[in-house]
Image (cartoon, rainbow, N blue to C red):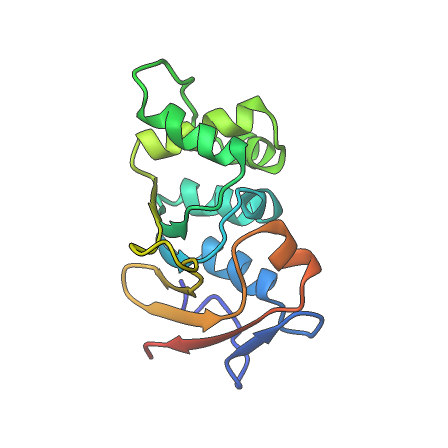
Length: 179
């Protein structure tokens, strides 16, 4: 549970290369929530690889994720999204086998991208791609909400949802808890 199972910093701020890293925030929240709504500039499924353990727990616990992202995607991510919408078979993924799910989510191979397509097709991952109507600039917000069905934690900051943002960049998030 978000309120009881996570130790939160008193200052409610996460920053790279400190005791309170954004990657730790996302991992803790994924392990303790069942809904994740995210609106951001850049999305890459590389973030799922980095957070494979947390995502496996999230999915195992019945979690669903809603993303609103800009239209700048890797070819692999774009293909997984497209595959989910096509009338072609996608292998079944047993999201109740947490160890196998962790293994699948930690590798960027065909099996991983089939899993993404399966999650999208089975309404566990919803991705909406947006672009400005006048074609000037890009959508570049970075905010979201985690929910466990009882409590919510919102956040806003500089952190995109990609491997680079979570591991390499200097990023920060400010959070607010509903309690």
